[in-house]
Each structure stands twice: as C-alpha cells, then as structure tokens.
Length: 455
Image 1 (cartoon, helix red, strand yellow):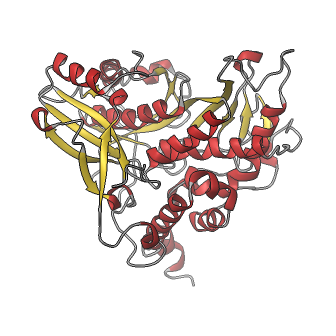
Image 2 (tube, rainbow, N blue to C red; image 1 turned 90 degrees about the vertical axis):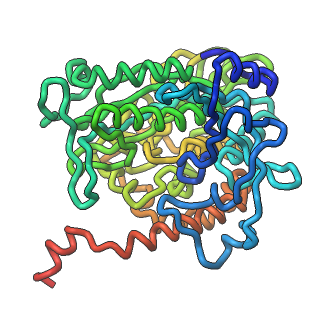
C-alpha cells in the first residue's frame, strides 16, 4: 500500500484533482460498522468546513432503533445536536465500481468544542492506540476475515444456501483449502482483487475455508487504525462485487445451520516504538513477561468483552464445541482449539492470535477491545493460566452463551470501561439491549415445530 502516514489535506485536494473526482462519499462507521454519511459533489467538499451529522447517527444499532429513555440519554443529548465531521486524508480511496470518478473518505467525529466524540467507534480505537503510544509501544495487528458467499436471498424466512459457481452447480460438501472450489468463483474474485488494488487495500491471501461457500481473506500486519479502515472498506467491496455476480456476501457469524461460523481472527504483537523490537520476545528469543501478561489480560477480560467481539444474538451460535470456534479462554502454542493461540514464529514475529472475535464484529470496536484487554494485562501484570497442551474443547465453557449474558458482564467490568470509555460502554450496551429485546419478540420455526403441539 502507498505510504499515507503524512498525507495532508493539501495532498488530499491534489489527489482528488489528479483522479478527476466528481463526487465524494463522506463515510462514518457507526456502532454496527455500517457506512453512514453523505455523498457530495466535488465542488461542495471542503476539508476546512467539514460536514455535520446528528450525533445519534453513529449511536444506533443494526435495526436503526434508539432507546426511548434511560442512560443512553446521559450521553446522547435529547436535543439531537450535531457532530462536526473531519475527513482523515489518509483514508481517501477511489470507488472502483462507481460509474463516474468517485472518491470515498472516512471521517472522524468531533463535538462543538473540537473533542473527539467518545462513543464513535473510530474515536474509541484512536484512544486505545494513544494509550499504547503514551507508553512507547506500537501495537501491530493482522486480521483474518472469514465470510460466506450465498445465493441471492430476498425472503428472510428461507434458509441461505451456497451460490452456483462456474460449473453451474452449488457446493454440496465442505471444500477446505480447495483451489478448485475457489476457482468456481474466479470472475467474482478477479473483481474483488481488482477493486482492492485500485483502493490500495492491504489484502494478502485468499483461501476457501471449511464451510460450503465459505472464504477467508488475510490482511498484511499493520497499525490497528489503518487496518480497521481497510476491513471496513473491504466488507463494502466484497458485498458490492458479489451483488454484481448475482450472489450475496455475508459476514454473519453463523449464516447457515450445520456449517462452521465465520470469525475475524486477529493476530497482535507489540513493538518498542523507539527500537522497533518485538516486546513479546526477550533478547535471547524466549517469550517475554509482556507476552505472558498480554495473554493474561486477554484471559481475564475477554469474557466481559464478548458483547464487543460477538455483538448479535446470532454470534453465539458460532461458539460451540468442536466446530472450529473457541468455547473458552485457554491459550496454547500452535493449537487451534484454544481461544488464545500463539502461532509458531521466530522471536521477531512472536504474536498472539485472538480467535474469539466474530466476522460480524465492528472492526474498530473489536480491535479496540482486544488491544484494551492486552493493555490491561501488561499494565496490571496479569499472569496467564498454564498453557493448554491438549484439546481445549474437552474443557468447560468459559465464555458467555448469549448476548444478554455478555451485556451483563460488560456493564459491570470497570477496568474495560476505564480504557474504552464509560460513555462508549453506556451507548453500546443500551443499543444492544434494544436489539436483544427486538429479537426476543420473534418466534422461531424451532419453537413452532417442537412446542406447538407438545407442551
């Protein structure tokens, strides 16, 4: 990717002129990870004037509903006041599927006093990264994002099924790591890679995962904020490409019954900002105290952070025993049955992989939360449990089993709130309670099948 760390507003204007941009999508990621904002003609886009949106725009759930009362309004003003949005010039990219030359720019949210809006997802991740920077540390992450390709589905009551590939047939069996299965969708993925190249996204390898129609894209390691932006943009990209090939791409954690769920595994390491050395390794190449403390932080705080890693009722269908997803917070080296894995690596590349996070998680929120857990582990010198040397699926569940249970844990965890921000936790949990209540109004086919005439 082109180096954009020092990309200025002047550079942004020149970039827009050089690419003959006529229209600009001004984007703001909301709590769900949905792109909110406005589309402006090039001549109306003014980096000095910025743009305004109601502050509740980034504080709504996937249903678009808001609480009618309660703690939510201790943070969100009932007067529905404006946020002042400022474009981040480092995020500008072309929209490769647009008919006319169109750019997309991600914006940060500020209040009228010029302070970052604390409950905006991008603000939360910025804040956590600043905490690391203040201690002379640079966090590095690399997400692995799974998703399903499915046939077009316009009726939510009809189960999803794999799409038809080049052969004219749908997958009927699992094709883990199959090259031929990926090749079934070559025209789609040619568009995806073409779009990613034009957008300068940091994508690495594409593989076929375990499920029928399930794929995984890996990102090169980089700074968390830039990679969260790229995951956010990639989701838009692959959905658009799939639609153009008469199919859907979904990042639901568990879209198809009987198939494995989709995760966003996040590899994370920590550099000494001054020296560039990996703080997870000692000079002799052995694992450092910081490495173990980071794992200890994940083990202590991941259960309370699950509502951030698994944000929907559907998310918890993925976390089941012996189905390629963790059920506990044990850790181990080169062990995919645990929630916290340390891949085999040399000393310079030593890292920790959080395998708990779902593909449905907001990338800004998920990265902020996992970094917050590790940060608290190092700062508080939390020792991990002994390494799991066997099959972690044989152990007990250590994670919440439902969104309601996860929200209760998150609300009472003061340490996480101190790092992620109390206002953010308040807004997030209040919105998720609305979603959970909405779901509980729905009567499922399972209930009608097994309860209607038997209870």
